[in-house]
Image 1: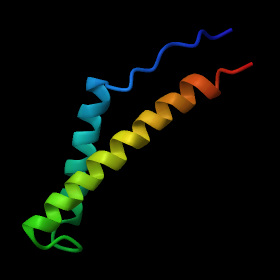
Image 2: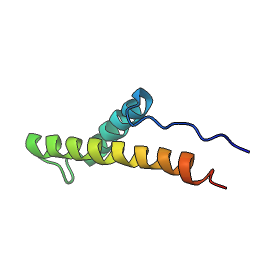
Image 3: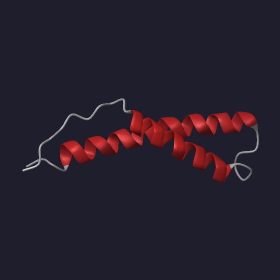
Image 4: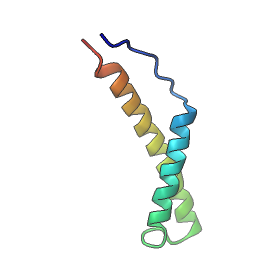
Length: 69
């Protein structure tokens, strides 16, 4: 039987992964839908917030709900 562990809401690994994904998304989208510096800043902020929340939700989903008996 798997043991349920505590999922920290703040994680360095998750934050680093979010930064890498946000940078990749910005690099691939720059010039097509993002043309100005302010649009780039807004896109990075959105990528960071949504990405971090998504990774946190997935950690909670895998840890809490998939191991439930």
